[in-house]
Image (tube, rainbow, N blue to C red; front, side, top):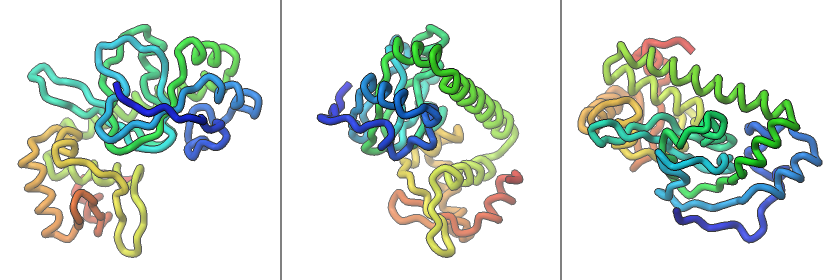
Length: 239
């Protein structure tokens, strides 16, 4: 695993994603202690944080960047479970279940990620009830999102799945630019296809249809949502 360790790790109070993380409610002294126990790393695009099947040694807190969490199917294909972004923690489930990592985490872009040792995480959970609560809430949200995705995708066709994915990405990575919304995340067509469980060729065809129908626009790998209401109608969901 290749990464670059920061020469002078930032204090957790200076983290750009502090207000979105599970440690955001810690007081000044507790944050100072956490800063001393974390290791801040910079990962290049395509580098791996941890690998499915390996034992967990701690958790990873995303300060900035996008990380894909992927599993390998029985036929050897990649299935992207979710995308972790600024403020997310990953690897936390394995810490509390004593199981090996159930997925592999790989950066989608250059990212800043802090590693916190397992022993200190468990100590922090015992001493800081708000951290325990936040982690439980995080686990519950992840489980709920996973169940909702399974229930929603189980009866939808590719057009409906893709429309829903674009709306999800709009919620997590959308930036308003006048009359359109830019999705501030670069996913390959293979990665998008994996997220909705379809063939890459099929995804490319449906993206082209959406573009022809003026639902979206694209410049290189960057996608723009032009008609959110039509996407909502296509996805058959109500937000």
